[in-house]
Amino acid sequence: MVFAMAEAWVCPTVLLCFYGFFSNVRPSEPFLTPYLLGPDKNLSRTQVFNEIYPVWTYSYLALLFPVFLATDYLRYKPVIILQGAAFIITYIMLLCAQGVLAIQFLEFSYGVATAAEVAYFSYIYSVVETVQYKKVTAYCRSVTLVAYTVGSISGQVLVSVFKVHLYYLNVFTLVSVSLAFISSWFLPMAKKSLFFHPRLEHSNNHSSEKTTCLNSKECLEQVPQAEDVESKLPLNDRCRQSSRLDAKDINRKSELLGVLRMLWLDFLDCYSSWPLVRWSLWWALSTCGYFQVVNYIQGLWEVVLPSSQNSTIYNGSVEAVSTLLGAAVAFAIGFVKVSWDVWGELALCTSSVLIAASVYIMDSVRNIWVCYASYVAFRSIYMLLITIATYQIAVNLSMERYALVFGVNTFVALALQTVLTIVVVDNSGLGLDIFTQFLIYAVYFCVIALIFLGTTVYRFVKKRRICHLHSVKQ
Image (cartoon, rainbow, N blue to C red; front, side, top):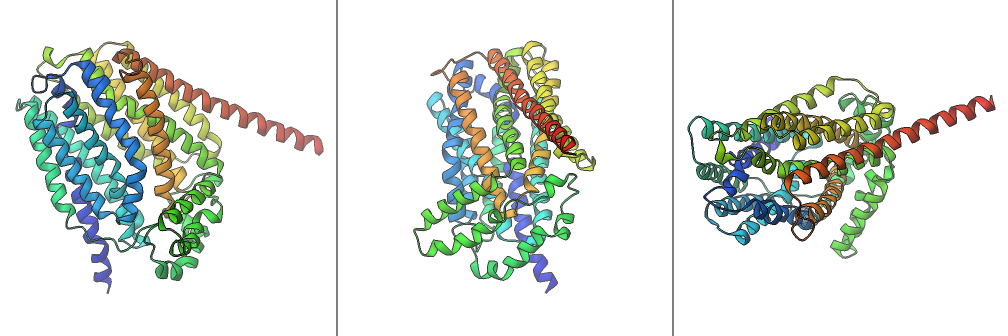
């Protein structure tokens, strides 16, 4: 019996980790911009930065919500297979396609793969028991980090040590994502999903048990050391129970309308919590800026030091170092006890200032090594704060609400990024040069810092006023 239960979660977890590893080992990714600008594709900087790269942002935003619904309706596995196929199409086109229009379609295909990541990160919760959630989450997320680092380092070694042409990095990446695609077919099909295919008979048996656990002291103690009282306060009980109650209505109404109504009610309930709104606001705003910087950082490096002037470029090493350092910092924060109820807004304000400073240094100091160092600092600070924000949001939610809230936050980030891309990057807008773009991104993070400085001052003044009124009454 014990062996059967262990095998039930071990097999899909191993298969999903195998898929996650090989789908993220992409040696060519840190060298994409030099490859597109090089003799293989012979594209201009304007074509790459202002016409091609924006397509990913637009397609990701357009596909995020439909893919989210399709993931739940199709029960995860078909969408994971779709992601693997989209990766294969992307890298086949990267090897063979020529011209701006073809590369734009390639970016759309990559947008499909990116939007389908929701299936990878939510599939495992439908095939393992609740008691294994924490363990399998750690496995699945860690393996993507390790894979990205392996891909970046291997790409750098192939370029710097073995002098491999950038074209063949795409061949190695195609082999890797093909292995991932093959492995996705062996994943067991989920028997349930959150909205379209809830296992009502199972949830009814465990509903009271799960609700009790979510509101009990013992359950909260299983979560890694919530430092402040605010983070331990559960959201409105409807946020945790509405999916169970509304799921019964799906059989009596149009399935899609029932799901949309369920999502809307959950959205209203979850975002009625100020702690969640506060961390979600920073999540969405900062992720928008983070996406912009990461998407166009290779363009900045290419302008500061064109690859044609130096046979060795270190993009892969920088990506690997920034990923590992960011992960180390994010891991270390788990051992630091801070009352985020008291210091949360100030931390968000300070971190936004530091991020703005690092982006400004990248833009103003036209030295490649300074750019590299500033980028490492930028990613480390962001990964530190996004880890804290993720935890602070998650500790206020039941597991079933993770996908909704994180999906909404990502959607808002992408919507803001689309506006920023249209105005700043796209030729239909201002079509600014890369240095002006990064100056605007630095100002953008300064605006985020001012927003949270304002909320910090407001809360301080409000607290002082309450204390003053209390003392007057006494």
